[in-house]
Image 1: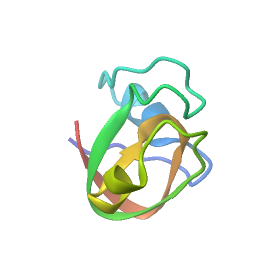
Image 2: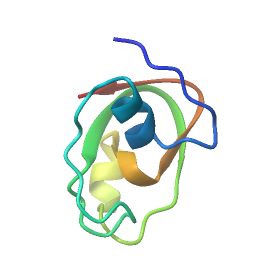
Image 3: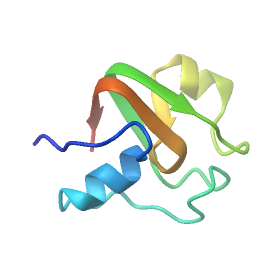
Image 4: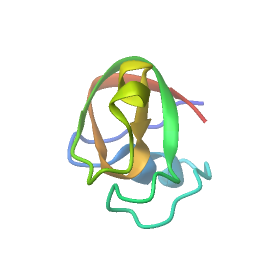
Length: 76
């Protein structure tokens, strides 16, 4: 499925706008509930400790606080 989003939208907002349900909790990058695997592309992620550096290195992002930079694919 493809969803269009502005760079000011979060991955979570784009997914919800397309009818996809990514579980989420705090929506501020603290709880880690919305962690998803980024398959391709780049995001600007400003989190508050809800994801480890190891997870980031493995390609995971927090959908609630990640903004797409161009085309991004995630595993939902």
